[in-house]
Length: 139
Image (cartoon, rainbow, N blue to C red; front, side):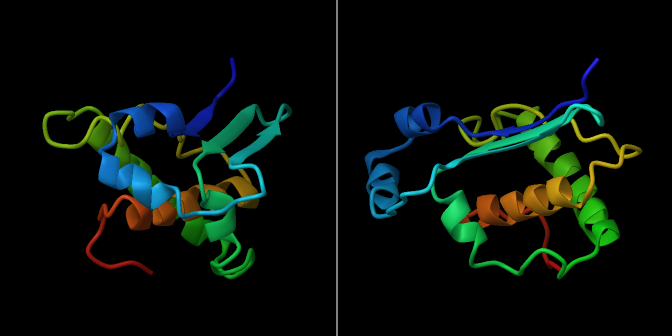
Protein backbone atom coordinates (compact mmCIF):
# COMPACT_ATOMS: atom_id res chain seq x y z
CA UNK A 1 0.00 0.00 0.00
CA UNK A 2 1.35 3.38 -0.90
CA UNK A 3 2.17 6.00 1.68
CA UNK A 4 1.03 9.19 0.06
CA UNK A 5 1.66 12.76 1.08
CA UNK A 6 -0.92 15.05 -0.44
CA UNK A 7 -0.69 18.77 -0.19
CA UNK A 8 -3.50 19.77 -2.45
CA UNK A 9 -5.21 23.08 -2.53
CA UNK A 10 -7.57 22.79 -5.46
CA UNK A 11 -7.72 26.23 -6.92
CA UNK A 12 -11.23 25.98 -8.23
CA UNK A 13 -12.48 24.96 -4.81
CA UNK A 14 -10.54 27.67 -3.01
CA UNK A 15 -11.50 30.33 -5.54
CA UNK A 16 -15.15 29.34 -5.55
CA UNK A 17 -15.25 29.60 -1.77
CA UNK A 18 -13.09 32.72 -1.52
CA UNK A 19 -14.37 36.24 -1.37
CA UNK A 20 -14.20 38.56 -4.35
CA UNK A 21 -11.40 40.50 -2.66
CA UNK A 22 -9.25 37.35 -2.39
CA UNK A 23 -9.87 36.49 -6.03
CA UNK A 24 -8.74 39.90 -7.21
CA UNK A 25 -5.46 39.53 -5.31
CA UNK A 26 -4.73 36.25 -7.09
CA UNK A 27 -5.23 37.70 -10.58
CA UNK A 28 -2.17 39.93 -10.23
CA UNK A 29 0.18 36.95 -10.31
CA UNK A 30 1.52 36.15 -13.73
CA UNK A 31 2.80 32.64 -14.25
CA UNK A 32 3.94 30.93 -17.40
CA UNK A 33 5.14 27.90 -15.46
CA UNK A 34 2.67 25.23 -14.38
CA UNK A 35 1.45 25.60 -10.82
CA UNK A 36 1.25 21.86 -10.27
CA UNK A 37 4.32 20.28 -8.75
CA UNK A 38 4.53 16.48 -8.46
CA UNK A 39 7.37 14.38 -7.13
CA UNK A 40 7.02 10.62 -6.92
CA UNK A 41 9.24 7.63 -6.26
CA UNK A 42 7.57 4.25 -6.67
CA UNK A 43 10.43 2.44 -4.89
CA UNK A 44 9.86 4.47 -1.73
CA UNK A 45 6.13 4.62 -2.41
CA UNK A 46 5.61 8.29 -1.77
CA UNK A 47 4.14 11.13 -3.70
CA UNK A 48 3.82 14.83 -3.06
CA UNK A 49 1.52 16.96 -5.16
CA UNK A 50 1.31 20.70 -4.73
CA UNK A 51 -1.38 22.50 -6.71
CA UNK A 52 -1.16 26.13 -5.79
CA UNK A 53 -1.09 29.20 -8.04
CA UNK A 54 2.15 31.09 -7.61
CA UNK A 55 4.01 28.45 -5.61
CA UNK A 56 6.65 27.72 -8.26
CA UNK A 57 7.34 31.41 -8.81
CA UNK A 58 7.55 32.01 -5.06
CA UNK A 59 9.80 28.97 -4.53
CA UNK A 60 12.60 30.34 -6.71
CA UNK A 61 12.82 33.40 -4.43
CA UNK A 62 13.45 31.29 -1.31
CA UNK A 63 16.59 29.83 0.23
CA UNK A 64 18.13 27.32 -2.19
CA UNK A 65 18.19 23.56 -1.86
CA UNK A 66 21.00 22.62 0.48
CA UNK A 67 20.60 25.64 2.75
CA UNK A 68 18.86 23.52 5.39
CA UNK A 69 19.88 19.97 6.14
CA UNK A 70 17.37 17.14 5.86
CA UNK A 71 17.11 16.64 9.62
CA UNK A 72 16.05 20.27 10.12
CA UNK A 73 13.43 19.96 7.37
CA UNK A 74 12.06 16.70 8.80
CA UNK A 75 11.71 18.17 12.29
CA UNK A 76 9.96 21.28 11.01
CA UNK A 77 7.70 19.29 8.68
CA UNK A 78 6.59 17.03 11.54
CA UNK A 79 5.66 20.13 13.55
CA UNK A 80 3.87 21.74 10.62
CA UNK A 81 1.98 18.55 9.69
CA UNK A 82 0.77 18.02 13.26
CA UNK A 83 -0.53 21.59 13.47
CA UNK A 84 -1.98 21.53 9.96
CA UNK A 85 -3.81 18.23 10.60
CA UNK A 86 -5.19 19.60 13.88
CA UNK A 87 -6.65 22.51 11.94
CA UNK A 88 -8.21 20.16 9.37
CA UNK A 89 -10.15 18.33 12.07
CA UNK A 90 -11.37 21.59 13.65
CA UNK A 91 -13.41 23.25 10.88
CA UNK A 92 -15.35 25.25 13.46
CA UNK A 93 -12.11 27.03 14.51
CA UNK A 94 -10.14 27.09 11.24
CA UNK A 95 -11.22 27.88 7.71
CA UNK A 96 -12.23 24.57 6.09
CA UNK A 97 -11.60 26.13 2.68
CA UNK A 98 -7.90 26.40 3.58
CA UNK A 99 -7.52 23.20 5.57
CA UNK A 100 -9.11 20.76 3.16
CA UNK A 101 -7.56 17.38 3.94
CA UNK A 102 -5.00 15.89 6.26
CA UNK A 103 -1.40 15.29 5.23
CA UNK A 104 -0.08 11.77 5.71
CA UNK A 105 3.52 12.33 6.81
CA UNK A 106 5.00 9.32 8.59
CA UNK A 107 7.73 10.17 11.08
CA UNK A 108 9.77 7.01 10.47
CA UNK A 109 9.86 7.16 6.67
CA UNK A 110 12.79 8.74 4.88
CA UNK A 111 11.10 10.75 2.13
CA UNK A 112 14.40 12.20 1.00
CA UNK A 113 15.62 15.74 0.80
CA UNK A 114 13.52 16.96 -2.14
CA UNK A 115 10.14 16.04 -0.63
CA UNK A 116 11.07 17.53 2.72
CA UNK A 117 12.39 20.70 1.07
CA UNK A 118 9.22 21.19 -0.98
CA UNK A 119 6.87 20.41 1.90
CA UNK A 120 8.68 22.81 4.23
CA UNK A 121 8.61 25.57 1.65
CA UNK A 122 4.95 24.90 0.92
CA UNK A 123 4.14 25.52 4.57
CA UNK A 124 6.08 28.81 4.47
CA UNK A 125 4.22 29.76 1.29
CA UNK A 126 0.88 28.77 2.82
CA UNK A 127 1.55 30.90 5.93
CA UNK A 128 2.47 33.91 3.84
CA UNK A 129 -0.20 33.62 1.15
CA UNK A 130 -3.14 32.97 3.48
CA UNK A 131 -1.88 34.97 6.47
CA UNK A 132 -1.73 31.91 8.72
CA UNK A 133 0.70 31.47 11.60
CA UNK A 134 1.62 27.98 12.70
CA UNK A 135 4.39 28.99 15.13
CA UNK A 136 5.48 32.15 16.90
CA UNK A 137 9.07 31.96 15.64
CA UNK A 138 10.65 30.25 12.67
CA UNK A 139 14.19 28.89 12.22
